[in-house]
Image: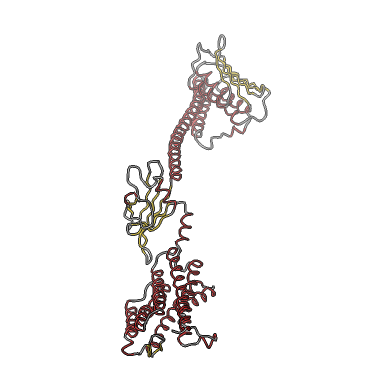
Length: 571
């Protein structure tokens, strides 16, 4: 055993053991942090083949004889021959999201199996190794055929990954080149070693195959890609950080076990928020074990179907549960959210209470509106009745008086004249009654002053030989239309009552302005009365005055006669 052989063996063992340690460490970190998926599984298959390759090379280096050394070479090629198909599976899943077809895989694995059988049976034909002994070996034609096959598969896999990288990073060409180069490092190193290009390019030749070690460099780049660019989908650590910031409980259930949860869910479970009032927990572990990943779990509903419901806890809290089944290539289970909607439920209750109060208020308003409507109708009827009473009383009394005069007339022509006057008064009476409920309930007389209107009214009674005196003093030139109308109606009703009830032959009307008040006195010389009994006429007069916030009184005079008195404010 030469000194050179000892040094070479030492460096082979040293570098390969370091590479093996690095491979195990980085893959363990990736396994703990990355989400489990078919892509990750295929990646670990590749890493397992590399580990077998490195371990076999270490054991081959320290084999005591050629037979044992060849045995470890066969173990090494048990992985190397299937490295190409394993890389194709990895690249196909990464590029297309699914494994290659069964027929293609059967073909690739059959060729790899034939390559392995070629290596294992080399002592029978020496076509893979033309020479193999304890001190070294030389390659045969089948070795180069196997290398070409492996390089072809690696080239196809790198093209698939490069295309996916280009689509994923779009305009970021640097990332695309970075990942593609990481894939190609082992293949480039193997090409340089097999065809002895190291010495031509770098000026020296490595004493052993550095392909497994170059795979470690590639692995370091993959680890960087995993944590920097989330190569293997989302990382567990990123998912935990994201879920921790969600103010609702999140539970991932898979095949009756816990696949994941956040701290909010754990807090809700510990505080009893997962237990509906009078029922069992919505999600509970067997034997009341602590919540932890992969713990057996019992769900109170079928997680294979979508659910959305709200329940009440013993502490009068409301929790909304939203369950959505998840079925894809990397995960099959259910995503369940637990949302505390106690505050929202309180607002909804308050809103419902307010709605009920509003509905009650609306009912009361509707009732009041109906009552107001009826009141308006009643007031309108009373108004029309009062107006009709006043108009009819005035007109009929005048007509009767004129007809009585016509009856006692000395000549027929004079009697006919009084009869025509009575007819006209009754005809005008019907027109005025018809206009009471009309929108156009405005007589042209309204445009006249109150003195002119009262003089015209007095003339109508004078034509029936009833003396009517009008006495106005200190009146303003412009008085509100409603006040003038009320004064006119009071005078008309007062004269009519004096004739009908008091049998008066004279009526005096006094109208004056005093201290921003309009005062009205209607005095007759009729028979008067003992006790005043307010009928429809006097009640209507009093109501009209009160609507203008005025004062009304009536009383018999000492001896004979009757007096009606009203005072109405001008403002």
